[in-house]
Image (cartoon, rainbow, N blue to C red; front, side, top):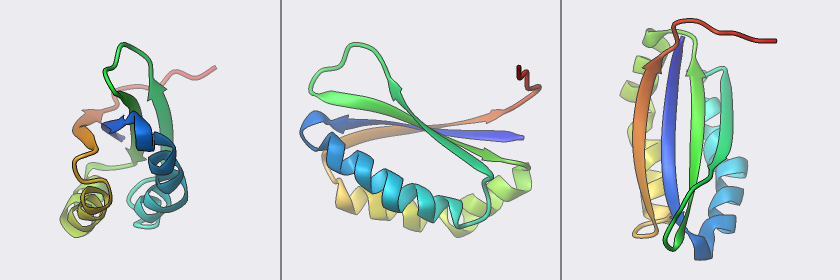
Length: 104
């Protein structure tokens, strides 16, 4: 299982617009690629200057499904985000391999 995490710090003045767009447009568009089975959006707590930080975590069942996303979908979806929120955010991406899950 692959966990693909995108951490975004968005300008506080537009964070509600961004959050609404993420929930209603971007995340559904990513999920419609069928490369991921789950997504969570979380608020990152901590000290921030003029921005709010969020983590968007997507689960791909296999490395091959994540690779398909990267090859066939990621550029267009990331470009749409960049165009819409240009200069108002900073983002970094982390790829993790889930070794084991523990649920209660």
